Length: 182
Image 1 (tube, rainbow, N blue to C red):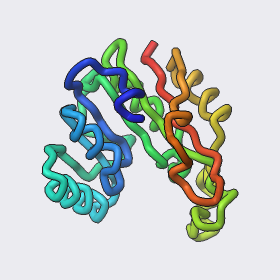
Image 2: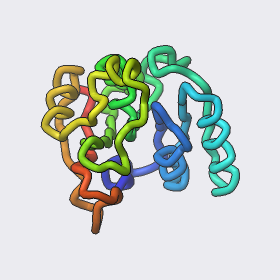
Image 3: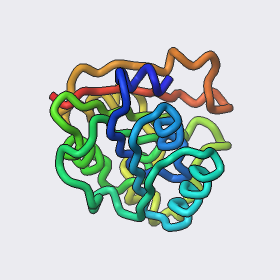
Image 4: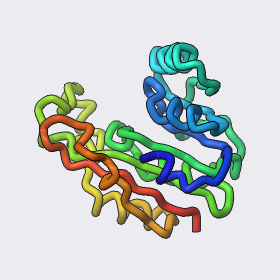
């Protein structure tokens, strides 16, 4: 699915924002792309580095907040954001960062879902933290489309239909969208 959503005809520079354990970054590296991943949690960065070593792929991971990514403007052909927007106090800032990092004609691939519908995926964040997260309950594809347009993206395309079955138990409504830097 990521290979299709990337729409790349050869190796590209990929930046994975909010990498976590590196799921998207490792797939991108396995497809032959040059990958840099960023996460705010040092433990997640360590886990992503270990996963890359175990998978035998090359990907660089650094600890950084999305708002403080130490990368130059226009350094990426593809930026990925997987299941991270709902965890942010300023999700639009993350989309603006993605837009800044992309070269003209670059692609953002974003995936998220409406996590509140399935007990297995509901957040266990403390109430005071959850109250600061505007997307704490998750988000829908229509919401994401509006956010992408507001952040300056165009040519939105859905990809979740390529999954033979939902990757999430509990019938979580999820989406995978690509968008171009317009």
